[in-house]
Length: 283
Image: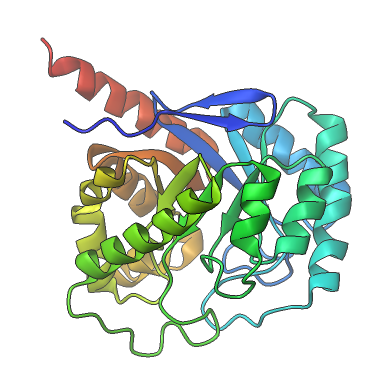
């Protein structure tokens, strides 16, 4: 069995992924597909963060720009106006809590790290800002490398692959090599469920998720309440928690070490049950 890297240097802390962990989603946006508009004020964001940390989130992912299908790219000024006050508030309220910044821009990443973030989550793999990879190396923080075909505004208009698993693997091989050449040490891999994929593509990637362990990087699974669940079950995102929980177990069985979620308590419960299943293998 492959055992990819299991610790990440996050600020002055080590994020231990020897047991899978939970990343709580904190969208500071008016238009995210599930929780848009709920946490735009600093106090609402701090309150939500406190609940997620109490429920067992190991890291919080703060995003100021929606990446839902059809979303527009906002200006860097608007993105910074949304995220910096919240990062300041979170860092003041929870100084030991690891924070990730969900951004496609080097300057936003730099300012967010100065404000207390210790990880960069980039849906674009550096395609929108050619300086982002260099900024990650300069900042010396973990980086989430995600696959997306197209861009948020158009990515769900007929996505096509000859072999989705092999194409995502090739993408990871190419971009991990670029990051390593720049000196980036801590890289997580996110296959980008729902980002330029059909329902069938998403389930194939989930079924073959363990393939990506060959790169010796931890795998992040971002499945929470996404359309790959909603379309199959014919429910809205608000009714997709049960489906999310089911797929989280599959992701863990396929090697995911970090679950990016809206519902922290339930994800932690899945991890506890998965852990018991793993223990049973030795009995």
